[in-house]
Amino acid sequence: MFTTELLDSPLESGRNITLVEFSHIYVGILNYYDLIISKLFRGTRVDIDDCLALVKNKKSDIDIAQLAGRFKETASYDIAENKVNNNLDNFLKLVDSI
Image (tube, rainbow, N blue to C red):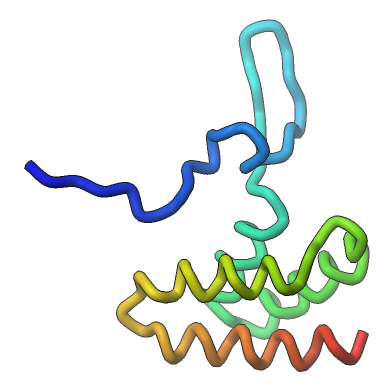
């Protein structure tokens, strides 16, 4: 059987953000890039507003060029690649205005 991993696992070091950690329990959340990508794929107004707020508040932690590259790589696996890339283009225009 042939299998391939398309994207990096969010469980890998640096691919998630620790929320809380106890001796036997770790709770992590998606990193900023993957969180924004997942919300922009859906592309509702609320999702876009959430992404804009995150970029505004964490601007020093988010490299927009890196975000765009990771987004386009992820979009290349989607059947609606053009649609989700349009979501990114619209988002980037809004980011330029903040």
